[in-house]
Amino acid sequence: MTYTVLYTVFIFGGDHLSNLLDSLSTELRRGTLTLAVLSQLQTQQYGYSLVQLLEESGIAIEQSTLYPLLRRLEKQELVKSIWDTTESRPRKYYILTDLGENVYEKLKEEWLKNSKQLYKLLEGEE
Amino acid sequence: MNLIDVYIYEVTRRLPEKNREDIGLELKSTIEDMLPEEYTEEDVKEVLSELGNPAVLAGGYNERPMHLIGPKYFDIYVSLLKMIVPIAVVIAFISVLAKYVVGFEQGDTVLNVALIVLGEGIWSIITVFMQVFFWLTLTFAILERSDRSKDEYPRTMSLNKWTPEDLKNTSYIPQNRVVSKGYVFGSLLWTAIWGTIYFNADHLAGVYENAGNGLEFILPALNQAVLNSYWQLIVVVIGLEIVFALTLFIKHQWTKKIAIFNLIREVIGLIVLIFLITNANLFNIEFLTYMSRIFQSTEEQIKMFIIWLTLILFPIFSLYNSFEGFRKASR
Image 1 (cartoon, each protein chain N blue to C red):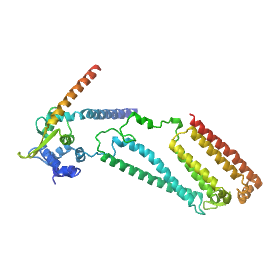
Image 2 (image 1 turned 45 degrees about the vertical axis):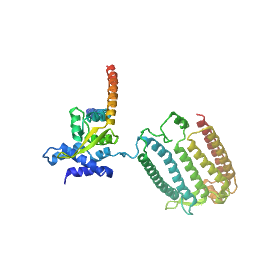
Image 3 (image 1 turned 180 degrees about the horizontal axis):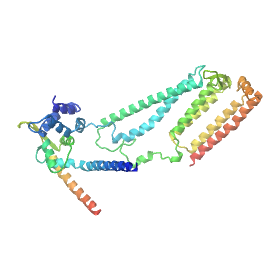
Image 4 (image 1 turned 135 degrees about the horizontal axis):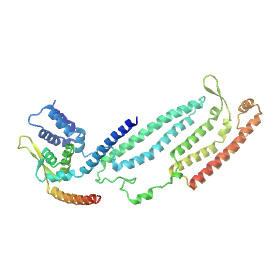
């Protein structure tokens, strides 16, 4: 009886831990997605090529997050899109606008500054 | 059936008309990009499961929120709900009660009326709660969608961003001085009950006997005509009790002023009661005869016993009640 209870607690506890870790690291990643996407749009990309580029760099992104994100960036005038119909299959290409490049540089600086500070903080812990 | 087209339809039908075509085309080209040259239905399923639930994807495209009431308005929504629901519920219940007090029909028993009031009261409470809940939720859902301001600061009661100035509007009440809503409701209910009995004493207050088919009202204890002749005074007492309960409800705490109000109310109530109980014709003679037969004493003794019991018990209750008011106020 006691063993069963302990075992159950153990399983539940482990499950809870991994769930918690998952949601916390998703939260950590979420803010960086925009920056990651902007960084890859200095040359023009279509949706799926962008996914592959990001995956090659080890950045996993839900596709259901990426496509709406692209559209939002376009609405904010950070990227512009062109339909290319010359190839066998029409594709929508995205590329940074001037405003987008400007914002990207600023965000990048901000990110590097923050991660340096965080790094110092984390190293100081040890 | 082409799974890809159905999937795209499932996404786009959730989107505003003007975006449908463009997003649909892009989605189609993306899905085809993800598929190998020669693909099977299994491949399609795999790709679509990677894209995930169409409702979620559409939600990402949509600028409208995917919730009724977001963090910006949730707190004020809940606060308003907590404020309005108890008031509405109490008013609903009391109006049901009032309807039956005014329209009390001859020949009805207390139990019968109590059951009807309880049943209809609960029903009207549920109805009113649903109404308030629905309209308030609807209002806030519309507010959430029509709000064009970009910031996400949670709103306060003034519908603005919180500042320390808002603290001045908060009525800070120490926990031990708080008057619970249950207490207010209870005292209103008590007023309604004794008011009902008072004005219907000739068929509510008296002797009940079990005559085979439930309790039956046999004879009234009091003389309704005498009771009715005091109606102005009684209306004043009832009015005072209602005003008192509402004051407690609004102030939400005991203060010295409220305690004094409570004392005045108790004193007036007591004076009216003394007038009433000492009225020579208050008691129904038949009732006194009936009781004297049971207790084997004279009618006068029964009458004096009731009068003295009232004159001793009620002042004790009143004193205790007034004292409690001051004690709670000074905590």
